[in-house]
Structure formats: structure tokens, C-alpha cells
Image (cartoon, rainbow, N blue to C red; front, side, top):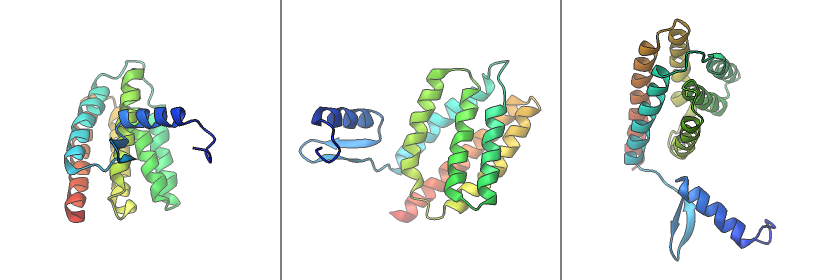
Length: 178
């Protein structure tokens, strides 16, 4: 606490907030640690993602602009060109945040931010970030094209399939790690 120049109460409150956000675990008399998620956690997170993200696409506000979605795809393309696979993963997160923002709900955006923060705890199990992130850039392009064409239903269906594939990849990786 002295090295950080913050009070114990401030640190305790930060730990409580991060525990509430499901990023830390607190065990009495043992302390606080970064959560280790399980395959069951992945399944639950992806269930929530399908409801939120696919629902956001079908409920997108009539005046919703696709600028943020297109910018996230462009960000991913730049990262791919530079072979920056962690950057591509970040661009992918921005893509999903932009999809949820189409619904025009600050609460959904905040909820999605928390879900994606938890997922970052999972992505470390992927030994090869290029192998995991690169194929989704093409899927992001396809979803953007469907949205630009005005076909929200097909975009939501494509996204649901995308999320099932990603979930299965992560679960398969968990089973290899165990």
C-alpha cells in the first residue's frame, strides 16, 4: 500500500469493485486473486453474448450508424497487415462493442464491457492468438456487409453462428489445457 501511495480502504474498495465485476476472486483468510474461468464460465458468457449481441442487431435503432462497426473492421485490417495479433484481438473486441452500441442503450454497452472484460481472462488459454483471432476478421467483414445491405436478420444469424464457433474453440482449448 505504501509503494502505491494509496490507502488500504481505497485498495479494498478497488478489490471489491473488481470482485463484483467478476475479474477477481476473494477467499477469506487467503486474499484476492485474478479469477480463473472454467469451460462452464465460457459457455455461460457466450450464452449471454448471443442474447445481447444478436438482440442488439435486431433491435438496432433506426438511425444507428455503422461508422463504429466499420472503423473496428478497418482497425482489424490494419492490425492484420502489421501482423499484430493482440491488436487484432483488441479490434475484434471493439467490433463487438460497436455491434451492441447499435441498440442505442448505454446499459447494454456497459453490460457488454463487463462481459468482454471477463472474456479477456479466457483468451489467454489460446496459445496462438493469430490462429484464434485472424479468421474472425473475415466474419466481421461479412457481418458489416450484411448490415450495410440492411439485412439485420441475416447479420444476427451469422453472428450467432460465429459466437458458437468461438465458444467451441475456447472450450476445446480448455479441454486440451486440463
